Amino acid sequence: MLDRISLILVVIGAINWGAIGLFQFDIVAWLFGGQDAIISRIVYTLVALAGIWCISLLFRKNEMITSNEEM
Image (tube, rainbow, N blue to C red):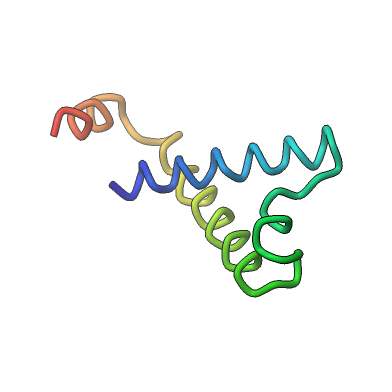
């Protein structure tokens, strides 16, 4: 479950960075009242922590990942 939540947050972060790179538009800041808003900072922090967690996915064995998906 934590893996899926982390992947969702990483995808949100990737979409946000894509919007910043392509359109110079920060979706998170726009939704939550600017980059300095506490909620925006929380979202940025959660996305960063999710990205760090997803690093562990690179080093897991395939059998472990497939066995968790079957549950």
